[in-house]
Length: 95
Image (cartoon, rainbow, N blue to C red; front, side, top):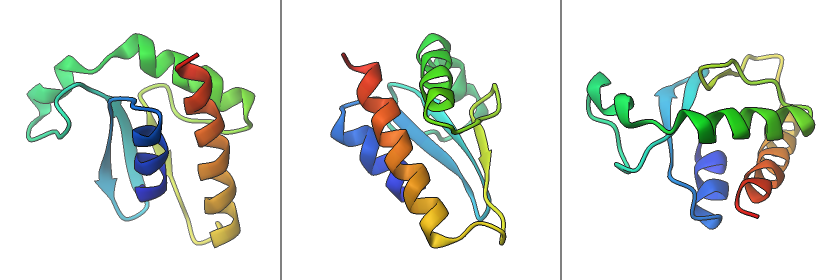
């Protein structure tokens, strides 16, 4: 979650990563943080859709609502490779 957050911030994307443990979600939202469900109503769904396609081009399959899951089957190398792939996807969004 921290790696995705940092990669998006580097590109100045309004990404808020929410969740805990092995389940989290991407929200492209101008608020900077989400305090309640109502805050998600300001999510930029077009930007999320673009991100999903860019991620898929990098081999990362994210659920249509922006959810991702990690399990014990994933190694630190898997996490590092995912963050690197998402960094490339984020960079493609700001061209």
